[in-house]
Amino acid sequence: MTYPKNTEKGETLRILRVIARLNIGGPAIQAVSLTGELQGNGYASLLACGRVEPYEGDMSYLADERGVQPVEIAGLGREISPGDDVRVLFELIRLAGNFRPHVIHTHTAKAGTLGRAAGVVYNLFRRRKNRAALIHTFHGHVFHSYFGGAKTFVFLTIERVLAWFTDRIVVISRSQQADICEKFRICNQKKVAVIPLGFDLSRFSEKSPEARAKRNEFLRGEEDEGIFLVGIVGRLAPVKNHRMFLEALRHLQDQRRIGLLRFVVVGDGELREEIERNILAAGLEEKVYCAGWQRDMPEVYGALDAVVLTSLNEGTPVSLIEAMAAARAVISTSVGGVPDLMGEFVAEPVPGIQRHERGCLIPSRDSRGLSEALIYLLENPADAAAMGCRAREFVLAAYGLERLVKDVKALYRGVMDSREHGL
Image 1 (cartoon, rainbow, N blue to C red):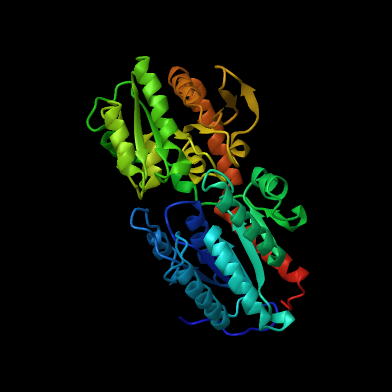
Image 2 (cartoon, rainbow, N blue to C red):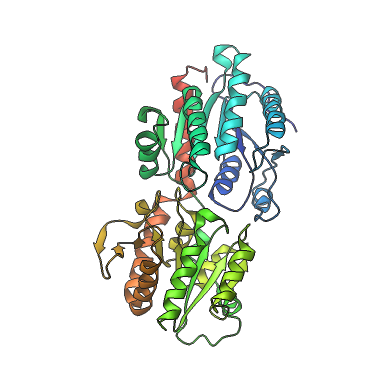
């Protein structure tokens, strides 16, 4: 690996970006995209990451497409392992010493802990003007619905301590800002910058002929006359709460209202076998197709009529942003930054269902509410289409990659100026 040489004042800002792994999801897309975009024209970026778990979808192909060559650090993955974590810490310190970053920017919880700890140690051996600014992005958080009370308290304590050494904490929505600053008291609001996610969404708004073939694949040869195809996209993990999704389908089946509704589960993870068993046990195998990870997501969303999200905890879910970019109607639990996507409240067509400008919100764990929301979309196609059109217009303007890069550049320059870093 060849690193940029020291440059004169104002020429090159070196960014060491650290993420746990490049598994399918928003954090990996952001880390790769920003590393690729911040190369040249005054910037040099290096991405460090761990290995993807066997059951996770791998987004390394995106790094290849964008000309990004990550530095792989064994042990910098999802699982906590004291021995491996110490080795990762020293490897990150060594990497920082070679690269001499002006900014160390971490993404995801474990990378945020080890990356910032490495930054603190690295800075101990640098003159004040040569110390790296430490920045961490919360794409979501693990402060509820992931672990038990004792472990959650430990993680909260670690984050509060690290916040003292962090120059700027980035959150991806106003709702998440309230969580970090007010609910969990990680840091003072003055240290927080709100920078929404940003993606290249141009392909999601295209009418792709491949989407028709993908729809036929999902329907497994069934006649498509009148079918309303609903997708749920994401890791098959407890926090995504696919149990609620399947409970809603059972309600519909028990009431003989499932009719022309068909469903596809897009994703993989540790719960796949359990989910497939539950589908068979409920007699839903002809209604639900488990498609696994899919690479060409614009085709996937183009094949669907609506997208559902049932998570217990989210930051700003990429699956909803992509579905909206494809002008698909969306239903989601009201968690994390999801309400920020939905716009103003419009009506409550059925008790428990909040119809907003750009989608429907339901309470977390309310499987009956989800079943009613699905029927509402099925029976009101014009309203579903209108929500989808408004959603596409919104996300294309608010969640574009160009806007993200502009915001992050402004963040870096502002942090460097405030530290009088000599750049």
